[in-house]
Image (cartoon, rainbow, N blue to C red; front, side, top):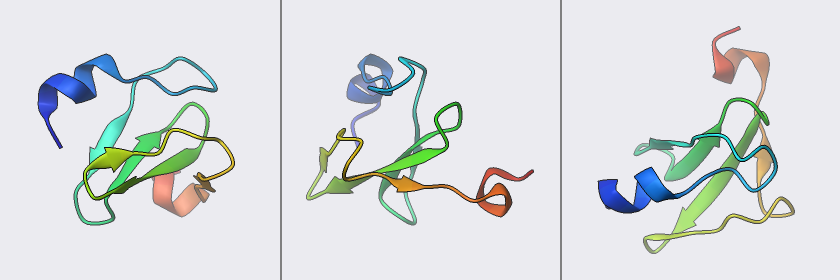
Amino acid sequence: MDTRLLELLVCPVTKGSLEFQRETQELISRSARLAYPVREGIPILLETEARTLSDDELGL
């Protein structure tokens, strides 16, 4: 994922920052507790496509 693009993207729910997880190909929104998929290099920033993160995944 292009780092310049990542700097521009925000979580559509909270408008907070996103972290790219290379292993899972997901953009993580810690504030919303959601992981948005990245498919073929394209971030899918739809709440309906995101999965909820567990406490373990968030390191809580």
